Image (cartoon, rainbow, N blue to C red; front, side):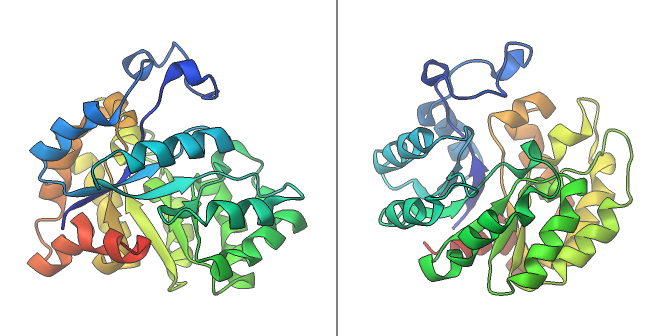
Length: 274
């Protein structure tokens, strides 16, 4: 099974995508699952993980509805709950009644670096293993120290780092991203998505631009803890779905068949439990 472990859909009329503004012209329009399917067929992708793009419960329910009408293509939803709210745990428990809801993504990149360490947030995270939920960490390198402290406090928490923690590839930055990712990867319950890197690299990237960053992620996590995702339609800001998919295949060329199949699908299937 080949899986796109990270993509979005959105409808601007819903009105809760605060980050999505007209200056992001290539993606400032509606994107539906019907728009995504031709690309998935081109890439021989069999299933997907649909990820939140707005910090609202309403959008999470919207995604669940999309998934239920996807003819079994969308196999997992990554939703949103305000983990700092007093009723976060009851909200998580209610959402978890939906079998497709597998993870929660609090959009950490939009919060202060230590937001994750608030007592209220930590109390909500304590419930994740019991509820069978994963924490999806949308972070930049500056958020990794707080994530590390969380992993040390909660070794039973399964964490999925989105987009390789968004290294500044366009700026050729390496540290402290590289050392912090190695430290995060030392925790065996952490997974990482091979996604979003084309966008971080800027429009003029080549495969060689991405190569050291992908090689470092493989070295840190091993192929068995990496999952490929398109990050569509955001990837349209970084060259598009097809260019990113082709680059990924080239960058994984040195892996054996089983390891490559893991990154391209089986690892996501196991991680999200479908």
